[in-house]
Image (cartoon, rainbow, N blue to C red; front, top):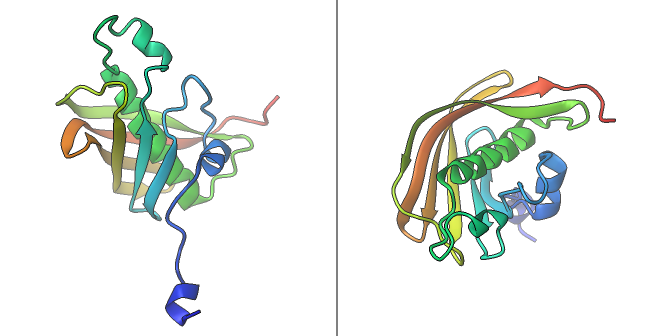
Length: 159
């Protein structure tokens, strides 16, 4: 093995690590995996959208479209994975919470069978507060874009 190969940093994050890093679970876990992780800089979350998603029953019958607010939530969860890994957050007694959403724009619908690529980059970081820009794409089309902030909060031990 070459010296460069030994220094390769793992940039992909599987579902097991996502489950260890954020508290979300079915039916509200909206990130299946992540890739291109760069500590304190950026990450790409992946969501494989299926017709079995519970929100499609009512949004909309006969014309299923993923709600825009859930696309923003998926971007936020991707940002939380980036924060958790970058800060090595001890998930016992700490949670990453959404603080703000700015400049949300919805460009194209997300439908069953789509794969959302959620590109999240850090705009600013100070201590346990991060400001992000997120862009959700299906193929080469932008589905949504948003700026958002999140922070690490002490929540006490889990019961």
